Image 1 (tube, helix red, strand yellow):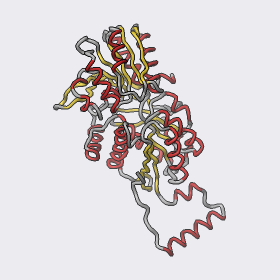
Image 2: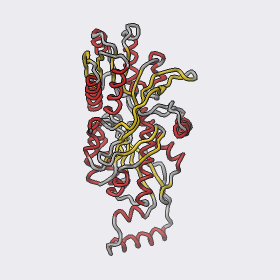
Image 3: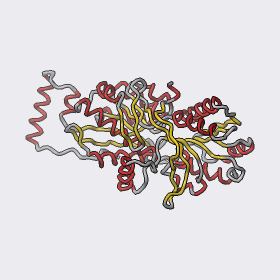
Image 4: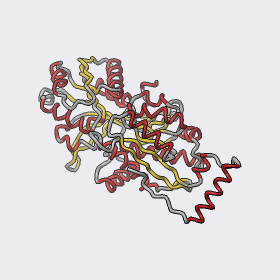
Length: 403
C-alpha cells in the first residue's frame, strides 16, 4: 500500500522558481531539513503492521481505527494535511519491520511511526526511531517495549495490565486452582508472570503451566494436560485472530465446560473481531481487557459506527489503539503548534489525558506507557450477536512490570 493522498503537480515555471528559492535558502543556511519538510504542509504517519498472512485482520483493524479518527476529526491539524503511509510486515518479521521503518523515514519522510503490533517487530524498529528522533506509537503489549527507545509511546495495553486484574478477580470469586496456558513469546511470558504473581498473592494455587509455540494452531495436546490437572479454571493467552478461533475449537472438543472447568483469560481470547467466528462455545468466558465494542459511552458509539461505515465490521482492541494513537498525535501537534521536532512531540505526549472510546486514559510521563481502566467482561448474546459485556472495572491500572 502507498500513501493515501497524491501530491499536487506544479507548473514548470513555478517549480523552477520554487527550486531556486529552496536552493538559495539551503546555500545561506536558512533552510533546515525540518523547515524543508514543513514547507509542504503535510504530516505523514508511517504505519507498519500485518496486512497479509495469518494476522491480516489485525492490520485491517488498525487501518480502520486510523481512518475512523480521520473521518470523525478531519485530516487537517495545525494547518497541515495528514497522510497515512502504510507498509505490510506479513506477520512476525523483525527485519521487514526494521526495513520498513527505515524506508518510511529516509524515503517517505514520515513525521511519526505507528503500528508494530507484534513485540519482535517493535523491538527491531525501536533503534530506527531513536536514531531518527521520530515518535513511535506502538501497539505491542510486552512490558519492555517502551524501554527500548525514548521515542516510543504505547496506546494499546500491556499483558500484565490485563492479566493481574484477571487473577485478582478470579481469586475473589471462588477460583482456588488455575492452570496457565500462554503463547511462548514476550507477551505470553508477561501474561503468565503477572497472573501467577497476582493469583498467588491473593491466596490462589497454580495447578500447572505450559508455554505453547507461538506459531502453533494445534492446541489439543496442551489442553489435554490442562484437563488432566483437574483445576478450577484455565487461564489463557494466545495472540487473538486465528489462534483464538483454533484454541476455542480445541477447548470445546476437550469437554472443559461439561467438566465444570472455567475458561478465563485476557481479552485477546474473545476479541471482537473473531468472537462471532468462535461461536456459542465462547459464551460465559470471562476475560479482562481495556476495550469492548459493547462499552457504553457516546464516544464509543460514534467510534463503532465510524468503523462499521468504513469496514463493515465492529472495532476491536487493535482499532481503538490506532484511533487513540491518532488522538495522541493530534493533541501533541496542537501543543507544539505543528512543530514536528521529535523531542518536542514526545515531551508534549507525556502526561496527556485522552477521553477515549475505551474510557479515559493518560500517558505516564515517567514511562510513556498507558494508564487505563481494565474491565472484567463475560461473553453474552446481545441482539443475537456475541459481545464481551463489561460487569466490573479496575480503574487507572498501570503496567505492573514497571511498578
